[in-house]
Length: 63
Image 1 (cartoon, helix red, strand yellow):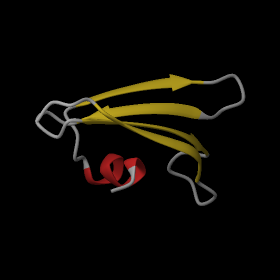
Image 2 (cartoon, rainbow, N blue to C red):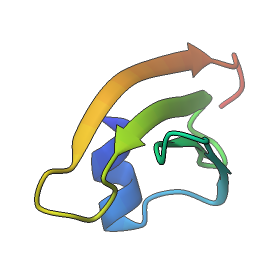
Image 3 (cartoon, rainbow, N blue to C red):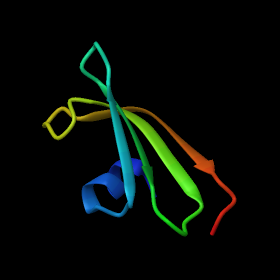
């Protein structure tokens, strides 16, 4: 599953947002018991021209 879909569905327990000077936001999501961390950069978050610029999924090894 893509991180942006997890964000919009609310399927996460922890979230951090790092707003960048160019207006993009780097979002980090995790869900207890899943063993993955989703990190992605979004331009125009929640707008018509929303675009995910990059995404990284890291396995944490925990389940």
